[in-house]
Each structure stands twice: as structure tokens, then as C-alpha cells.
Length: 137
Image (tube, rainbow, N blue to C red; front, side, top):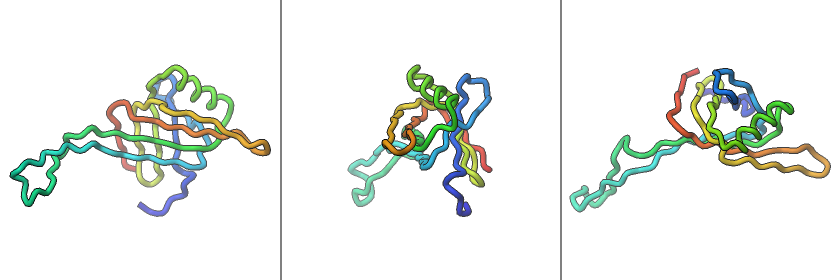
């Protein structure tokens, strides 16, 4: 993957579940983490007592986090509505020249902050809530 501008990573929400994704925020920082649990299958017969893991058996998950400012009042309202409803919605994360991750996520965290001489900012955290698809860019 070539060097990319951080601002090009986009976070899109399909609020109604109709396949219409809309960019919801001007994120100043973004992070996409993939992880999996490990399943330890080490026994007394494991070579030299080295830990052995069972491939493909752990729970996989993705977490998306970001902070910034909302694009407009409509996107602010959409994100708040999804959070307060506790709704699992389709989200799309676009990583330029790499690909797109799409699937169901729960908006697990939403924080607001502001300085007396600055704009209102937010932090959000999405947790995967089902199978994700990856499409190479």
C-alpha cells in the first residue's frame, strides 16, 4: 500500500439499511483495528512446551474509532439517532488504494467535547456485529 493521506479514510453510514451510504463526519483521526481471539490447544505433548494455537477458531472482530467534527446537522442527527436507538446498522469504511470494509456495526461509544474558544468535537467507536466483507480497491 502506498503512502496515503489520513483524511482520505472515509466513514459512511447506511442509516435506513437501504444500501445508500452517506459520509457522516469530518474525521480528523481514524483507526480501523482487526483482531481475533486465540484458542490455545497446548498439551503436555506440545514440542518443547511451546504454545500451540488452533487456526481459524477464534472470534474475529473489527473496531473503528475516530474523532472530529460532524459534516452537517443531518449527519450529526443520524449518528445520534443510531446511538440512542442502540441500533446495529450497515457501515462502510473506505481505505483509498486499499479497499472497502463493509458490514454491520454497533455504535458502542459516542463522546462530545468542546473548548470555550473552539468547535464541538466528537469521538465514536464502532464494534463489528456480524460478518464483514472486504473489497480490494
